[in-house]
Length: 164
Length: 432
Image (cartoon, rainbow over all chains, first blue to last red):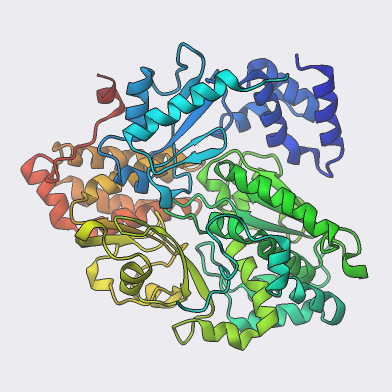
């Protein structure tokens, strides 16, 4: 269950909207950021908040690639495999990331930090090859720079203050 | 450098501020229109300017706007489209990030033209930084009285919300976008009334690309004739943001006269081929356009000249390939994209694209047969029978491959391997 305070905030946002269904993606994002992914429980909660059926939420949740229906790491690395980024890789970024982190696509690293997902063109072709991590883009990348980025994200994780 | 309009305030280090936009004449067109003009006058000027949609289709903007009937019900909506998920395309990101208030003024003028009350700024998740930027700048615009209730003391009230999308290519298609905003599964909607009559929540709705909207304040300020004069072609109008990527020296977004020749764009703004490599082909307007060879190097990059040559300008995102790049593998990559992004609603698209992908993968891996080639030609035809424009778009690069590079496909088959030594692993092979 989400905390009451959060539920009230979401409810207020829905009530403030002329058409509550316009809020469905925002609600899924909010619940996802609370649980770390859109859990079964979150699907049911979203349905309750929006007066929709869980099935209606499910058909949206499974459609969108930025809604995660399975657990993911703290940092979700959307590695671009669009045509421009592909052109610049001897080995694709996805393959390199999976090999370096010793995970398969969609898995979580044992420290809970990373999940690698292949992504369609992320719109940073002028910085190819590029990845997107939690809404921020990084590029142009080489294997060395990918290593640096992972190191930096690990460091951030250890010094970031998290007030929940 | 040619006249910079949309990128006149562009700076590499940060977005232009509200004050900088004001100093460059920003919000003057809106003030003028609201205080001394009329919606009809705005639409007439846009019609006369010859502005055509920059999102890919090239539909005349003034004509679209005049499709909202005078007696149409309220509330009416404007949906500035910043989904921009066409592979190779990143111009809208550069534009929104470069001069957010130019985009905001353009949206507000469109709203004024059709008496819309609400704008919904539809933006893809990988542009989250720009979504945050736009939200901040909307607040600045509201504080200055250019958005909100009774703008500049007039009867016109309008405000803009940011709608964060959660991905998927099809959401860039106008009717799918409406479904997405309404909280439905974003399938395209075909047939029925036009969006300008029955769009979002069955009310008149303008879905316009943000580059199109950003042209509007300039047209109103400087006149339709001036705008027409910006283009290099006789029938064309305005400048164009060409997004250049691939094997060139200076990838980036460049504003040039619409109709600038392909070779001039690549060798001029793009700085020529990377490291002295040789031009082989390019996609002229993103992934859903066909490969163009060197014989098109002198073509004017405008809607009509490309159409006459059997091509499409699309989004004007030019993806450049050199001689070392295997175009079978490239097309395979594009088909992977389309197969993954198909919404799955209709059969030709859902079933046809994975079938094409598998044929191409076998060719790329040296397991192809000559009989695959007529099969691929047939598939191009079948894709045109799909429900929406997604599958015909997906067919374009494949058609280009078969038409311009048949030898390269045959070489893969006869040599039983990729002549470029590439080869494409299946996900299963990668795991081994």
